[in-house]
Length: 379
Image 1: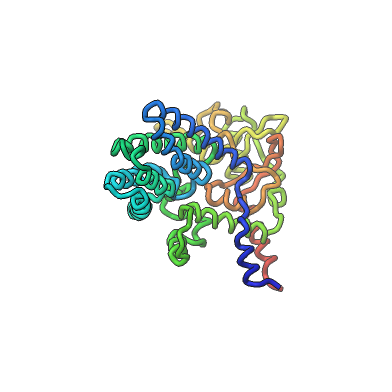
Image 2: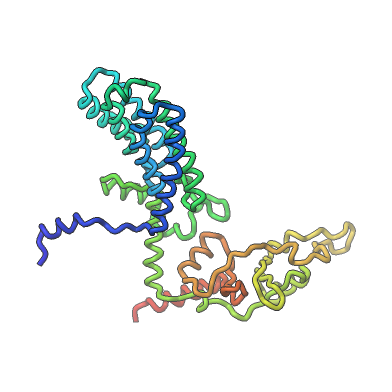
């Protein structure tokens, strides 16, 4: 039988890390990349002992920026503003005449409060304030000139982070701009209209009470991903191959737009895949909107003025390419978000060789969701 002491001891066990080994290697490479120019540039521009004393907080900042780029502690204002403000506090206290221990303790407290008040909390900056305030004459002798190497380190770190993180697939800094829907209106995305809102997340964070080391937008995305996985589990293994249309109408790049219009009108379709003749490899797609762009007015004076098509135009000149397509094993939950939030009206389904094997429309998806809903009803 478990006891409170056993439960407490078990709470001391480290929590599992969710990042992959590749992610940790990426972060370690980022730290190494920024540390080399930081040290070499600092040793060249400033005093060598001074730079080595400031290297510790700089490395800690780099670890945050590359290993936890979603953290509010790792955003550009926290890096630049936090380090400069903390360094200024450390310099003032080092010149105040206080003994090293008192100056270091006061620097830690003042830096922590100031950074929170100015909305740039950065733990390594508090360490930097302690290093400067309690470092003795060797560190405090340059006085306010200490701000130059601190600014150099912070600006270089942010510049490398902007380049490295974004090139390796990690958006930095984290944007707080609302996501626009495909129609460029202020309406929320379809998947968010019956879900929680920003205000719900803010209210939950206030009720939680403790500081959460993640931005609100990232927390919201994390919750939505959790909901998505829960929905995937509840819906079972319904794949694109189970709901797609297989008997398809398609055309080739050398077909004329008049032929494409006739096919769309005859079969009441809104889009037509364009494939390579013979191999059925998906090359593009033509929609009614694409065709409407190539109307021309009828000659003036005709008895029945109407719009006609530019004769001789082939589909290769107007088709949309490349085409967003899915594999036959794509889960229905993923299809829901693609056809709702991304504003797509249809999804071509391709095999491993990018050959067209099916099409999924919004109608197919609605029918599949309705069928699944009926199965969930109690008998």
